Image (cartoon, rainbow, N blue to C red):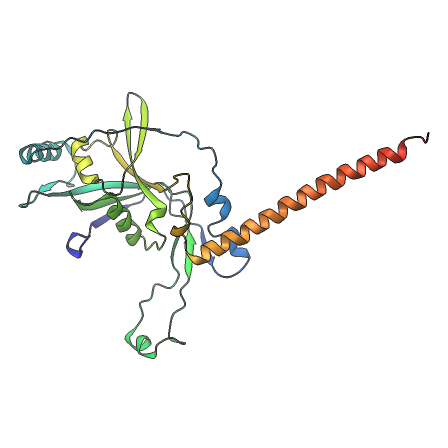
Length: 270
């Protein structure tokens, strides 16, 4: 997305839950505070799992788009209108609800490098790259002003930039949620889908269609999406878990062996 197409934002919080902060440093204590292998690798049963649904997206003519925009603007009760551009594209707002269960990473030192530091080169004047990991407030909501040609992966990248999140965008996915006949349906958007187009086709009703940002749990772990510190953390945590499992197994067999030996000593000779 070019600078001219960068979405503008309005942010509202629907929860007063405080964020839990933890620092990512090279210490053992941070292993349980940062992304862990357990939270990232173990597939736990999910409650209230929404059912997937496939959407049929019609191709609209320019006249149909103009009519849809008029109908859309006539139904909303706010100033979040859609506008038709001279080139045939259109702009408007989409609301994205963030439902992230894992912490996100942001730079712990947000101070930009000064010209004086840049002239010094690497050394005392160079800031050490560190990350701070924290939980975003639950059910945070953002309104994004986007173009009709803005794609789902661009929406994800814009959301992460606004929150200063430095995690790989491939860790996240944009979903559309719909309520039909008392049932809730959820569908993961492909990278090239256009959320504003979906919003126009569905109308302004949030029950008909809403957007959610969630972790991209595809079932396969994309190791390329993790940073080097995260991968080292995973290895260290896996080693700890392996050692703990081995300890439990040895303890179990040792206890069993002891009971058998006690039974042998208790048996009368002959």
